Length: 350
Image 1 (tube, rainbow, N blue to C red):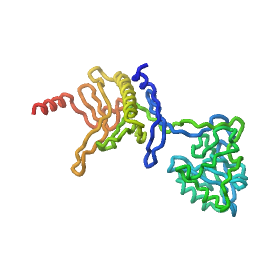
Image 2: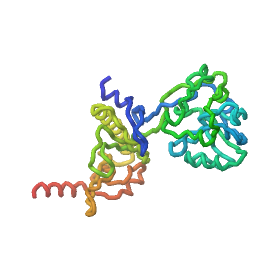
Image 3: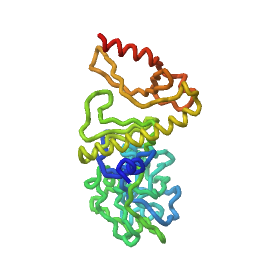
Image 4: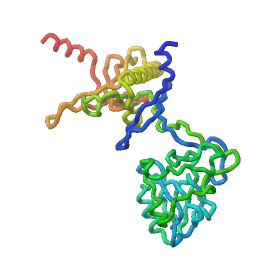
């Protein structure tokens, strides 16, 4: 199998991903024939189903010394719910027997906190009164920063490296567990255990980008500034991969060529399907994304993505790819190929 045939089907490699203002982190790219998968490494439950996997409502009282006896990490700013990261031994949370490390906090006294930021959840807990009712659900896929043991034999020896110093996420144990002599001893019973329950570190899908009508570029959006060994892919529905940083220039070229090949093959196949609905003199010859440069008197040249399609004797300009037959009647602009050729010839003779 030659390189071109192989990359049409699959290509896998390690890159760095910068998503928004987050620091770049390691991801695995997996390129299939019609989809680009961006995967992150995480710890997941691969076998067994604990009895507490569904939603549970637990009521605990705040102690004068020790508070609720739990710590939390995560929050909406990290694209995860707030999760219980520590449970202190012989404190209220542990004594309830119904709270576990890896539980996502969904509600606090009836207040929905599924999409709240970390500090917002901390404030709600601070103001919850002496008694708090938590609605929680154990995450089968637990974020890797919880450092869950990777096999059931380790259930009584969890790592104690889940403090803020070992994770970019904030651990709010000091807010909720404020005894000065508290060493955050983790209780064995606070770790999920049940017959056949097993944890493994695996690559999990972070983002899936369908390649049909996707566009990719090394340039900073709207400019002619090129990124070094980096690119981004934007799916037809607007979902962006984030900035994918390759380990070398050659690696970046290989990825761009492989992605371009798969998009091209998908486009050609799609054109054949669409052309079944059009007569011979209105067949699609080509379509794909381009960058249009607009001259703005107040600033430098601005580039914007446009979708062009050459069909019959006309060139169509779209803001988004035509998906249905009706979309062809809603092109932003339509140009006659003959007029375009005449203008080109006229420019050449001047």
